[in-house]
Length: 335
Image (cartoon, rainbow, N blue to C red):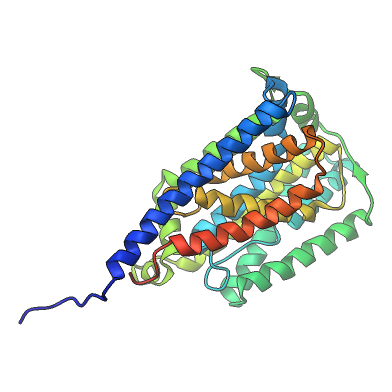
């Protein structure tokens, strides 16, 4: 008896069109990036100076680290917020961690106490997301939105909605340390990028993380403890928030309310990063490119005297565009 595989008329053509569209989208993304940077290089005075380029990388470091956390959540849970996951709490978590860090310093504790406590708080908030999503089975969008408000409320309670300053040897190093012409913040970004990239792309654990995020049911059938990987994703995002919090305090010499405003560019960077990848999946390199693109965009607008409010509008438009384009370019499930 011969098995015959039925095919739907035109299905192959649809997949071919999607594949071609995906290639054009990726080429178009890099072309748009090149054109925008070229425009700024020509018309924005000082844009291509070494000082300005390093300054943009340094300014983008905080955004990039938190975007890495969001990217790991996307990798381990999927980019569909209905079936997969998202971490809306990462920016508020960073604000809380910054408040905890400077409060510890102000209370007289050294970095040997303040840094572990800060990291523990960040990871704990991340694991709270995992608890809500995995154990309580709450939709990720609602779960992380609730945790975001919890973190924001705790930050206001700790700081009493005021600026809290602090100083320490770690902060002094991040503020004034330089190596080969680049600041300590830039080198910290390099270190976090290498560690996160190796973990996600060059280890068996990273391969399994992609499997869980992309094919949850298949991974479960294969024997993977999918819940543990989702917990890890949110916990890792919390750790990135803690690292970003130290970077925030180093730049401002204080913990200040308003960190939650970084959520939009974080989402834009993590989602836009999928366009710069081969298969429209979240990658660390793609997120790095997207974060720097957003940083250069803001810097170029500033040098041209364009209101910074336009940057928020562009970021929102990018999120809508990326979600729409990737939904069209990806092949349908089961194809």
